[in-house]
Image 1 (tube, rainbow, N blue to C red):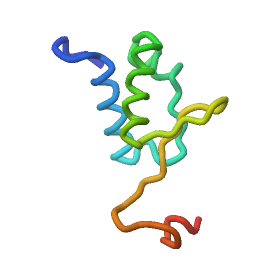
Image 2 (cartoon, helix red, strand yellow):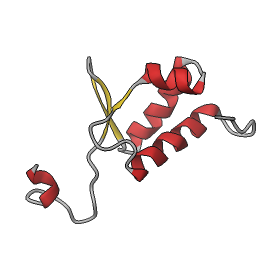
Image 3 (spheres, one colour):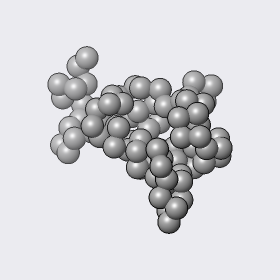
Image 4 (cartoon, rainbow, N blue to C red):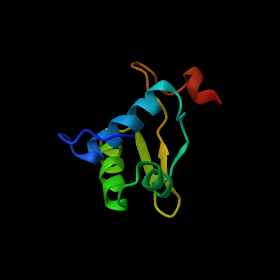
Length: 88
């Protein structure tokens, strides 16, 4: 990936991951590996952590201590307990 020099790298990485989540390339429960992203984008771990922190604040990923960060379940408007998505 070629970075836009006018925008912070972490924002661009966040945008790429957000697009992968919304397109279904990263379905719910997919591990978001900081090590893999660090290697893929050739950036420092702190840059990847800023991107994942932003995604976590948006509710797109969840982080479990000792396990890692994963794509969050998709919530459509009006979905809740008892919906077809919850019955898997």
